[in-house]
Length: 114
Image (cartoon, rainbow, N blue to C red; front, side, top):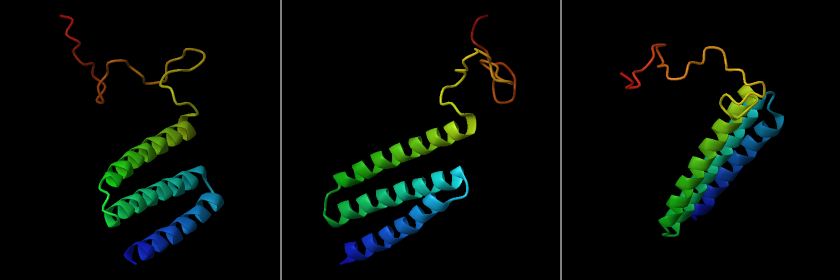
């Protein structure tokens, strides 16, 4: 009974989020909605494993969560930059401000070539 109620609540939430994914005014709304669906799927898998006494389902849920996270980051990077490769511009140009070996504060790190 508890699984039925939990599943119904998650599926209703997934349905509402699916509406946002289809109607979202921006690509970011759509990506956020799909990420939310992935997160709810992870919860559904974990609850199913808990209630059926199958702890290995938690491993599957964690793997799915990792894939969901990496996929979301990849899609957002593609939307932002139009490319998934770092520095793979066809003309061979280096992005502005890119300095190999630079720290976040702009100074160069010691490469041990003394």
